[in-house]
Amino acid sequence: DDRVWINVLFRLLDKPVVRTITLCLNEQNPYTYRFEENNLKPYSTDYVNKGYLQLPAIPDTMGLYADAWHFKGKIFLLQDEHCFSSAGSLISMCPFSDQLINVGNSTGWFAGFGVMPWVYCLPHSKILYWVEPLLDFTRVRQPKDLFHNDLKLPVEKNFQQHVDHFRNKGKLYTEDYLFTKDPVFRKAMARD
Image 1 (cartoon, helix red, strand yellow):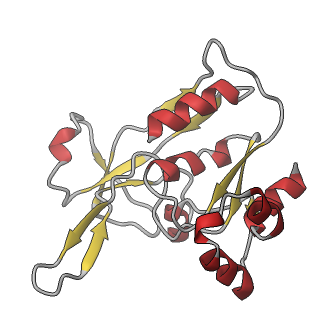
Image 2 (image 1 turned 90 degrees about the vertical axis):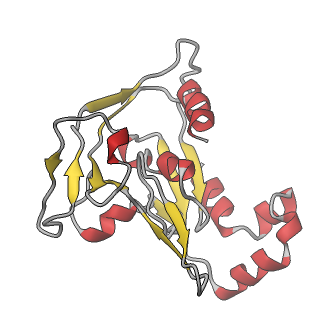
Image 3 (image 1 turned 45 degrees about the horizontal axis):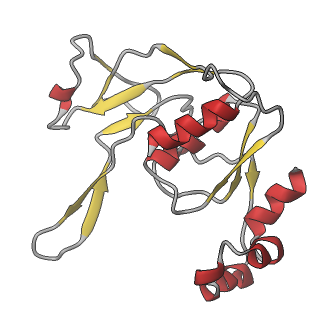
């Protein structure tokens, strides 16, 4: 969860991470009452003209712990299509830090800070769908930026690498698999 990666990351980093987060509520969100903000204002850009209320955007500095190690090297965050929720918050830290490098492929999920995905099921067809009542509009310049899936080191897997991944389900974290077959791990190690 968020507490775990924050506790680990802010003992490792060499300097604080400074960011200003822009969060917007879907006006149709039945739980907007949870945000005790009286000064919500409509949010609009060239591609969003209605439907979202912006929470006050305030600078947010994530400082280091008093007993931080001040690690000077790069910290590689491996990501794939299974990163969402708190992992989505973690990988969304990368644009704000020169020390954090995300490696892998796009999640295909909405990542970002404070995102609250809710999954629903249609009663008769049992089709699942999900909504994002709170979205992170931080550094969003065009619609695709809402996913917060920009990678510093993208890795496009080929067909054989996907097959190897599924054939080795129980061995994905063995030394042999990581160093010989995992393209994301190998790219991160090549950059070390």
